[in-house]
Length: 73
Image (cartoon, rainbow, N blue to C red):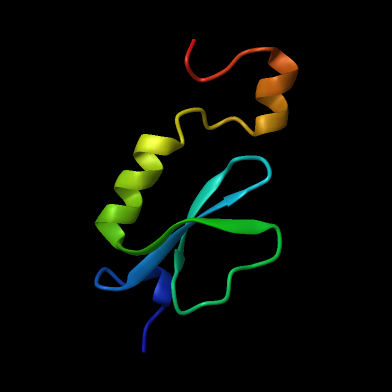
């Protein structure tokens, strides 16, 4: 068995942390503390599409708040 993070045919979650950072996570691996599931049981391409559509500002949430800007500007 190879690395589940590299499995092109695997099932993935999209996780989000308190800083609104996103990551792909193999669905068979327990979700680590500090992360919540934003998208469950998706193919790798579906998960990547979700991240691309929803993680519009790559800066951590605290930096965005400190700068007084958001991704829509």
